[in-house]
Amino acid sequence: MSRKFLTIALGIALSAGAASAQDADVGERSYMQFCATCHGADGAGEGPLTQIISDKVPDLTQLSANNDGAFPMLDVIHVIDGRTGLRGHGGPMPVYGALFDEEVKNPGPFGAVLYTRGRILSLAYYLESLQQ
Image (cartoon, rainbow, N blue to C red; front, side, top):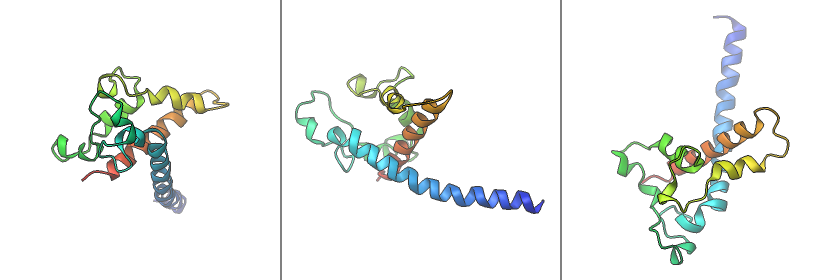
């Protein structure tokens, strides 16, 4: 292998660790802003709005336990995104993919898509960190 390739690979590996830490922060902030009012700050499904919501709010800390111990990452992403036709909780959960798209001021040709997917992935990683 060339020295240049190894330098690039090392740089990518090191930056991935920093990006993961940043993703967790973005994911946690997004969760607290958009999800905690229903799912609770701890993800157990007992947020303040559960008193006025007729549907049962899922305990997000049990997603892996309810999926044979494996975190259902793709399913979680699809529910958050909402653009796949799969709606969280049968429908009352907002479609966050569209909401995150609207946050991008000057998206360029792919900016909104990249921003939205990154934001949703960060949120999904945060939910994965809540598993019991």
